[in-house]
Length: 429
Length: 106
Image 1 (cartoon, rainbow over the protein chains, first blue to last red):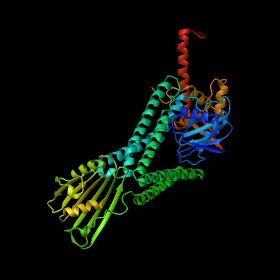
Image 2: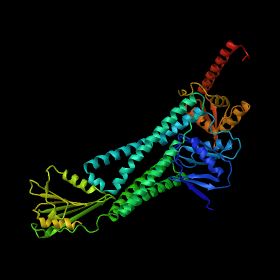
Image 3: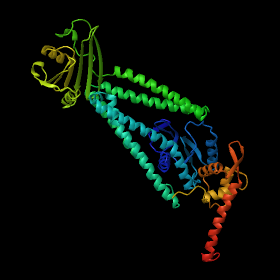
């Protein structure tokens, strides 16, 4: 049997009673709390016994404090006198346990407990969650406006789509946490003013569990849908990002604890962890940029459209640049060709839709992108279901060709014949 | 409504300050409160720690020394005034009670 067991326990700092109940129940089942990590709570297997757990608060404490912080030690000393042994700490939260039958409770004055929780919550809950809320709102706003301006770019970007789907859930969860704390505080203030106890709450734990299940279900659906639509790269990208992020959080947590064990001051510890955080975030961004290229699901070879072979195009050398992006519902390949040393251009955008009806929507988006209106043309000679054409005052012309799943936009600085367009459309398959 | 800070003292606050009329360390305060009240009042270590910290920051007690991890405290003049005010308040309540029901009556 393994010596340690790991559990995901999602409590907010004010849910002390739910935490105490859970830890005492785990002890009766033979699991004593050992430490609290970034994702898991670590339990040590021991003989089942009715250990009582209790939580108290060190409002001025910080997770960056050295392990032998005098304030923490002073509290530990007092608790030891009353028969309580420290299990571990988690930010301002100090978790103690005792095997005594009727111990003096850690907290014997509810007004003092409430004041300590409020001070702790200001630093460890309200401030960081308010910052997170602002970041989520900013990111959602940015995605919303960029998605409105360029919906095709959003739909063909797997990472952006995943983030766009998850951010509202994170926002909802944050708002639920704030609301749960507000309700708890209101009930506690009333109760304590009447000589009662602080309120009991286990709401956030239940909400977080639902959130975790939703995220895992969304991630699994994303992976299955990606793989089923031949977009395994998108799922791999998301999985790689998730694993790198978890690894980064675990590494930072480990660094913080190590510095704490070695007696670094709060300021020194925090500075080093922030520096490591910034360095890792930059490294992660670089890794993900390379990964997005390696795990891209667009066609490996660019569409077979060679500008130099078209009827009215100069037959000299052309430079070609290809960019690709893909999501489980839409892939986009853009090939830009420039005449070497000349002024002629040929741009080709190929959209491959993987949802029924999405191809028509793509064509409509492209038709509305420029001010000049497209004219409907006869699509039959081009082997397409629909064809649209527009000429610009600059002399350039643009065609949009579509069939059941493909939408191709061709923009050229020279006239395109029917044969050219048919070859371009066939070459984009 | 929340209690305004130290405008009135809870039982725990009162006994902690009372015990610090003489220099004592935190652990001794817990023992002394229990002895003084014949076990009727017990001060938990979490409560004691937070109250000592607040009393210290507000100048009602002062740290008089430290032996290892044990710190000793003593009531300041400001703390004595606070304790006296609480005593007067309690006495006033008792006097009101006795005027209504007579001494020793319920």
